[in-house]
Picture 1 (spheres, helix red, strand yellow):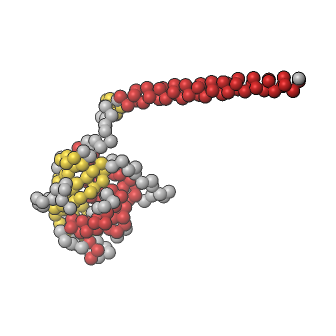
Picture 2 (cartoon, one colour):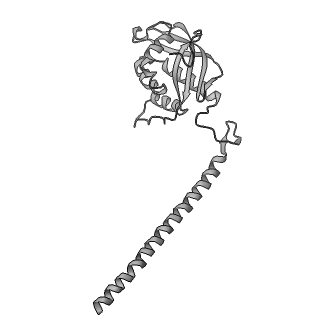
Picture 3 (cartoon, helix red, strand yellow):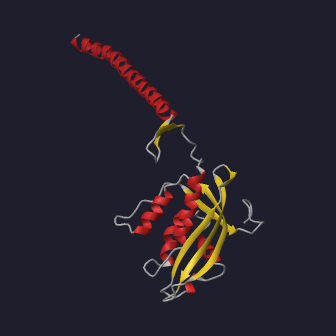
Length: 230
């Protein structure tokens, strides 16, 4: 008789245990839903507007921008700084090193063409044929306002000159660099810096924070150059 009573008690406890477990799961689910609703409300509140401090010290609120939206001045600055970086070199900062770093600012499919495009930018001058003591500096005269080609894609015209100094020749040689430059927005994060970055790497990192990349360069007079052209 005692054995039967013990089995009955165990049988009676099992439903209670199952009910308690179910109630615990329901409570956990309700807590998760409550936390999710709080996060959703916070997300809506934090993405309504952002506070931006202007260079003159004034503070304004702005609406959030789509990830493919870039301001015209940001595009022009990115192009100017990127092309200047690619076309400025010296014995202490050889062009091969510059190109390796600057390639991070160019789309993957354009990277294999980078050296050819750089050579074209100097009107046929082969940069590798210059003496080791040569210095090259890009001087930009004008960058046009961006023309939007598609969502997240723009084209600018750049008028510039590359000054090349060889050895003791301090007068140098000026080569026109007049190009159509195509850029696109990217979601890719900027590559992390090494532990002891050099100034060239720091410059490329700062430029890359704009999350833009160059994907095509054509001569400014090339009427056949377009978004769809190879």
